[in-house]
Length: 279
Ligand SMILES: Nc1ncnc2c1ncn2[C@@H]1O[C@H](COP(=O)(O)OP(=O)(O)O)[C@@H](O)[C@H]1O
Ligand SMILES: CC(C)(COP(=O)(O)O)[C@@H](O)C(=O)NCCC(=O)O
Ligand SMILES: [K+]
Image (cartoon, rainbow, N blue to C red; front, side, top):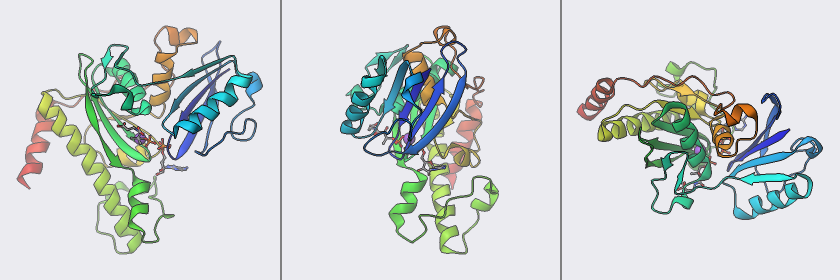
């Protein structure tokens, strides 16, 4: 089995993938903390022959995790942000400072769709752009839904936005503190992503396929007017193409990848932007 780990600031996600069939056998998530407990937090490592890791947690957490895994698993691959990979050029002046989850998302998005706008709705909401020639032009970092809510300190931190609720309801003025906060942060997140997407497409004169991932991707998706797809395994897709281990991966196939989304027409994106600036 291959163990894929995506260690975020809030949740550490894992999945087990079979080498022969390339099938995902199981998956889960635990709160990100200082130390992993194999068998309790993650599956028994006896069946694992290789581990691939994306981590944006503190350096010590990654070092401890890798040390622990190396004791039981023959091959441990740790992804890093680099200046160039798989046809993509990192837009950061100091490429290694780009969060590796963002880098992996950008690589996976480029592999899937050519140019892309890759949005990761986790602890932070990150929006990264890769142009059709492979140039990552940089991105944006906005506090995620949970961070926004916690920073208000209004006693609403434990009342999450119902991911199944009506998106339209979230656009109405709240009539309680909980609703005012939930509707406010929802507006903040969805309008920010929409505006960023439109601005950058306008600046570069290209409407890019829009991809969403992360724990809050589904809820953000429901308030996004621009055509897009949700791809929960986008970061894992980046791990697969950086460290291909199965036959399907060597052939360039990423598990759970959606079909490449159609980009909206640039005129439509620009019309939306013009409307916004008239308000
Ligand atoms: N079952 C859940 N448990 C925890 N957080 C969840 C859950 N479902 C959605 N979320 C949201 O997803 C966010 C975590 O998303 P994730 O992409 O894993 O973040 P990160 O990569 O920063 O750890 C939380 O901040 C929360 O807003
Ligand atoms: C921006 C992030 C905090 C997002 O992390 P996440 O919300 O997925 O936990 C992470 O990608 C990170 O620590 N980046 C380093 C700074 C940067 O990308 O510029
Ligand atoms: K994120």
